[in-house]
Length: 184
Image (cartoon, rainbow, N blue to C red; front, top):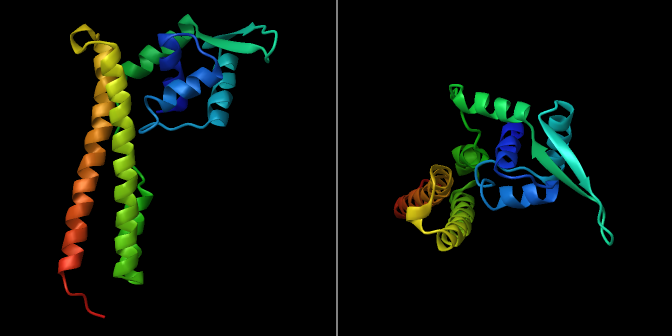
């Protein structure tokens, strides 16, 4: 998977500037596909060079010119090819779990601190994603959502469920660590 295909997907929905693209991504897919502004602009340049998108420069009087990116037919073909190909398993690298695996060597207090911080991050993520979902649901009644919008909401629900499950798992682990007597 690549940022290239994520950007093609967004541009297939509507033409966007790099700024608009970054905003849309942070409001929808950043919890599972983050990208910073520099990565987005580099990828837009690459897509233009590959002739998968085109750029229209819109002159503005009081601000810098706006660059509006549009997907071309070749870009739609590439996006559809990518969407249709089988998805190979890609194991996640999870720095938190690696740290948790080893943190016991520096003590229970540090282990509990690590778990507390991660639970706070997961709670914040669940709150942000819930707010985004609520905003979308307020704009369009569920019965009027098309397949694409329904699946986009499903990615938010997935993120919320993962965050909630992680919080529950951390709470259980913290309780287990508190209840046990540890050798010193």
